[in-house]
Image 1 (cartoon, rainbow, N blue to C red):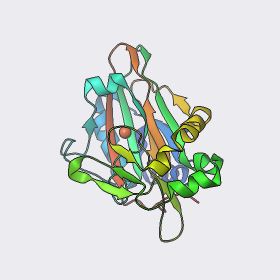
Image 2 (spheres, rainbow, N blue to C red; image 1 turned 180 degrees about the horizontal axis):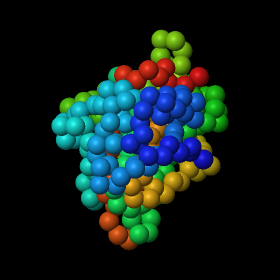
Image 3 (tube, protein in one colour; image 1 turned 90 degrees about the vertical axis):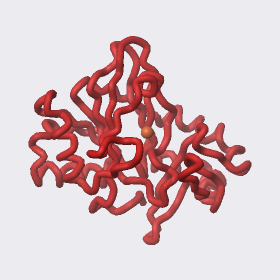
Image 4 (cartoon, rainbow, N blue to C red; image 1 turned 30 degrees about the vertical axis):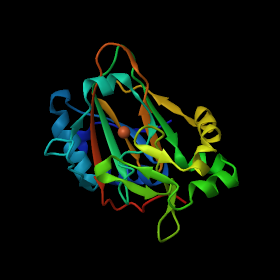
Length: 232
Ligand SMILES: [Fe+2]
């Protein structure tokens, strides 16, 4: 499925251009680092070449967030990162420092394929104002699941967990939406020393639980890229 960019240490202007082209079309690619012990430098330099790395209150000063071990091993259902922001950061980069011996696969779902699959009434309700509330109490936002930019490009944010509160009009469609997840979810096993970059305004992401062994995962969020926000 996802195309691959090898060796982040070669993140020259051509590599950066290729990365942005793939993000504009496919919306997702995998990558590997050239030198495992220098992964932090390569990961940060590559992310900074794509746009502005977001430094938020739950990550280190460079912008890298290392998932707590219990979160990385427990896995997560499909979701959008930072759905409570007016415009969630457009790129997420995940780097796998250590992979589980069993389980721990990353999962992805193309939101463009999802909205093109769902019945028109469902997509209409997903686009209704104030039909969802996302976030922690500190960052709460009433908004839409399927939103639109000024130039009529769509973008999606979704999370059906304790950080997403759906209006009854959306709750009525959850089974239809999540039945479609089953057909559209792609599974990627990231070997240690590799990562994946994807459009957070298009793809939902998550992870399957680790069944054996530790899993150490780091994340970066990138905003203000040269990409057009959303998808057609
Ligand atoms: Fe996430």
